[in-house]
Amino acid sequence: MTTRREKESIQMRKNIINAAKKIIKDEGFEKLSIRKIAKKLDYAPSILYYYFQNKEELQMAIMQDGYGKIIKAVLSAYQSDGSGLEKLKKMSEAYIYAAYNMSDEFVQAQINSADIALEHTASMFEGALSKKPALQLLGKALSQINQLKTLSEVEIELKAQMIAASTLGLIVKLIVEKNLDERQRNRLVNTFINQVIVPIALSKGEENE
Image (cartoon, rainbow, N blue to C red; front, side, top):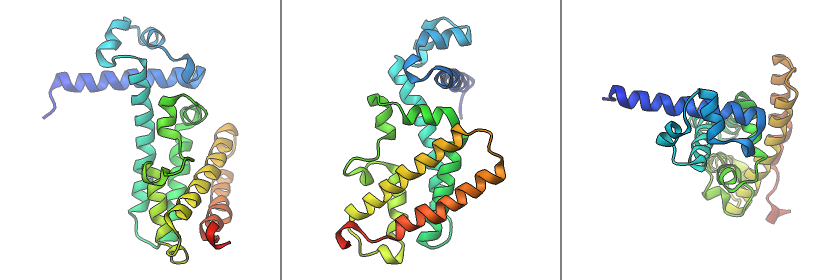
């Protein structure tokens, strides 16, 4: 059973992370500092250091929190009933909306080239399929599609990377163009999945061209 002290500690960490996210949204990751967070919460900086040893540890917690939400959404879609292609569509939709709901926080993380950010967002490197959980789930769905069962792991990885990269482009546009109504946003997402993601998934592997 969680004690009252433990609950208070968990809530305090959440408060610090939420305050940090607001600063990131307004100013970017580079401008984040313990002093700014302390000022926003009206606490002495020393109190924050009790919960996070330094800014880097806090940044890591923020990245893990955001990435965890995306993984949870994608995993839920992957575990749903249906063929590999049906799972791919559901996973793509889940990823897009999970990222969209994180809005500016997601964009700031994706455009940040700092090592601590890239540890979570990098996905274009060789071997990413075995190291990035979301990409790994995407690869598993691709491998379950009948037409792709003869492809090598390298070819599956490249397909997963192209899907991830193109999906990121759509997400950024949806976030930037905030005034789109829900109907148009849903139409764009559905069209993108069926006319971009599915064709990438079903295309020949590079070794078969």
